[in-house]
Amino acid sequence: METANIIVFYLLAAVVAVSSILAVTSKKILRAATFLLFVLVGTAGLYLLLNYHFLAAVQLSVYAGGILVLFIFAILLTKPVIDSVHEEHDRRKSVFGIFTAIAGIALTLFVTLKFKYNYADNTTISGDHEISMKLIGNALMGTDKYQYLLPFEALSVLLLACIIGGILIARKR
Amino acid sequence: MEHYLILSSIMFFTGIYGFITRKNMLAVLISIELILNSVEINFSVFNRYLYPEGMEGMIFSLFGIAISAAETAVAIAIIINIYRNLKDINVRRINKMKN
Image (cartoon, rainbow over all chains, first blue to last red; front, side, top):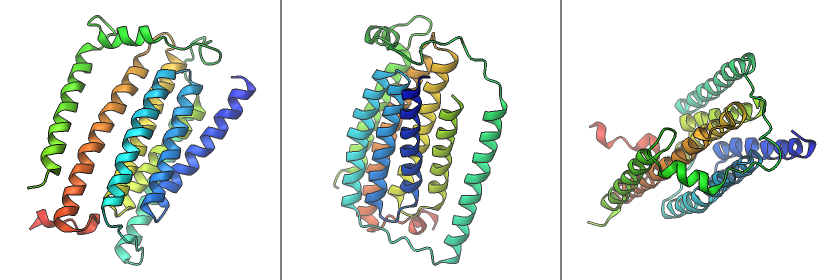
């Protein structure tokens, strides 16, 4: 990676890491949603850094555009829960949560850093190596090997089921 | 590449921590979003660094984004319905189905 890429990566990584920690620790739920927005936009930036432009666009429009609005509406529609850590049960749960997270991170980092990755001789990371839209469209709409029409259609059925289920659950009776 | 993986594991386990400790159901859902997002970063990073000639990881990330969007929509519908019936979305107090 070039120096500029590295600087941008560390900037984005810092934003994403700090915001994700704040998103789960902040008391006000609306603030948590805002930090989630920062995380998602930072992730879109990481995809751009990896030269996945289409993925970054999808991330921005679906997550940051759609899901966040849904979240904020749901938060505004419901009464906030007062987060009290005074109860003994909750404090114990919090301690166990921190323990789980730290143990998990330690294990994952150990495995990740121990393993020798077999890097391809890779020139696509820096520079302009965008995957063209035509390639993506062909891969999503074909039936050959490495083409994904069947999952695509299954996903469309899933979305239909979600629409119907959402309406059925949330309608007024 | 390890740096991306470290970042995504930090994100994943903050998500786990929030999933365990938060009381508001919407906050739990936000934690789930963090977890799914870190998994998608992992898919595309592995694709880019280890198998740059293919695009399977990217396609998997796309499907993952779509599935998590659908899941969130249904979950929010359920949460709003619970709120309408019980006037409360505290996870500790949703125990009507127990008895």
